[in-house]
Length: 186
Image (cartoon, rainbow, N blue to C red):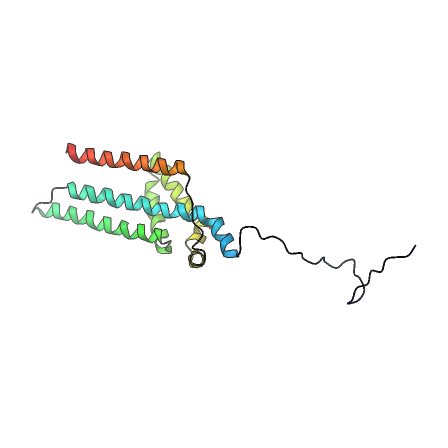
């Protein structure tokens, strides 16, 4: 019986040589940016939703400021000024969070700590906010590199569950009804 020739065109066969890599299907991702974006998009959407919470706070503060009687009394005007400045500050933070700006992340972290004291609901909400902003994924989502990844992958979008959207619409409806009831009963 003859032994099979183990030589190739470039020399002797080496049984300890690493095998050649074969082309592997990369799956749905065409680049590392797409992979990173899909790995972080849920965290990105949740982080942006914190900005939406701040925007809702701006609306509530604006409504409360509008309800206050603004007379010629300097105390009333000073109180109204506090409402306006607070609303402007929170609006800037909301926009910063929507745009995934690092400075807005850190302001939201500072603002979340006192909210932990509002047991039980405030503790849960602000604990979740701190989780979103302080984890490794949160650091990545608010980095300059991730903003470049977003620019390179505009075709990747986050899709919310229909149940979440229905619950959000119901929550906003209840909130608006409560605000309307408070305005008309006062």
